[in-house]
Image (cartoon, rainbow over all chains, first blue to last red; front, side, top):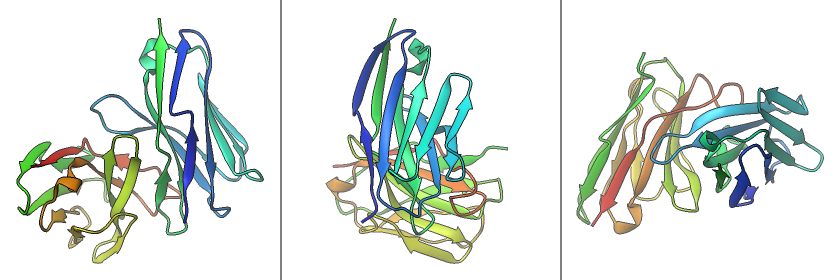
Length: 111
Length: 114
């Protein structure tokens, strides 16, 4: 079936360092890849998304890259801050038009 | 503009009881969906709807029913609650089928089944 693999499951970095989270997807027809940030006890919130017609998208300290040939996409956070600490989920559009989520990465940014 | 509103925020049930989780959106979105979130499992799709009168099953539909009589509302019914349904439930909506518009999530309902 369709699935999205996300790595690592936990990531700890020092404040100011960069963080990278990687995902792979199984459905080569997927064309939409959002990233969500979820703080403890809160709802998932969209932080950035990318469509299959581009290879990279940036928004301030956050960037997402997409390699359709390899079916990989990654989230890059530069100059990390303590408020970046949260669980991050990647997702890919499935064949029925729904989102298929990875299992999440818990990012901890140490001051 | 409230976005996606879920009620209740918390609920405790006994095994075998039934209940309905409410979800309403005021953005005139066509697409609505229900997810459950369990530790280490991410978000798994239960049921979804692409418009009023149309519903379909997701990855984990067993034990749940949905209906979509209006564009605004998409309630989730637990028919006979089981401890395995203890979870956090999120409702989400988007203007159209995912792929062209981002999904907006509600605040969630924390459900415990004893």
